[in-house]
Length: 323
Image (cartoon, rainbow, N blue to C red; front, side, top):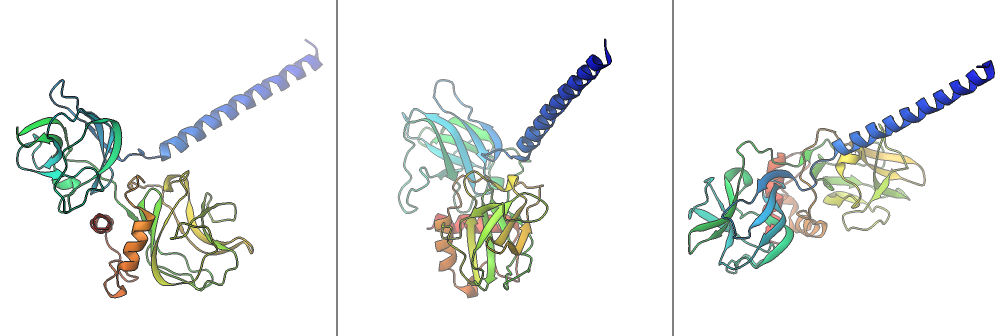
């Protein structure tokens, strides 16, 4: 083999090795990205189990302290049955009806379950009940005192909870806030927000990297639009990430002026999150109306007070139920 041939073969080997390395790095990147994502429905609790032939199937997830997600639920609707939670692993008459559908009026009598075929939905627990206070969820016939199918709630279930972050850093335009809270994988609660409104091209933005920059993604304001941010004078607001993003694939939330490439202040998103998935339990319109309806004297999140993640979650759930 001539020197020229050896040189050509060597170059080919280098190219092939580089290709292999690139493929490997892409694989690692894909694996890392995938591993950063939490289960999109919450913590899996189990499948409905019961008498053969009664047609009750589906998988149950814990979304947060007050919400369950029922995936691919099927029931033939032939009996006068209801969703039912109890404090025993084996369902009994000592239990509470959970109303379905979610929008059922709180003052009306519970409706029996209709026939459902491979349907997925949120199931909100009654006001005085949390996932930690129950041991089973069943499809229950009160007249026959019979379970048509049930799921046992594990004792050691790690229920997702909101995550309290530091306040916005104070860099420009009098931006300041209380401690920012991640309510779910797409929703932020920002209490006691102050900003002078003088940035000509300012928006909430999220992105990746060690520090904020202008190549991130705009986040709609509390009204759900992408208008230039107005002044804030102590308001508590909720904002929601675009549907293609969650807190698991961003590194920061910033108030940024695009025109002048100016960072007014930001918060960093930690990696060790176990927050509720975003399944519609925190609707921005409902949250905004709820926040606006609370007098400042009784606002349950204030600049000098940070509630525990569980208290935030329970308070939101209680109030949203009555909207």
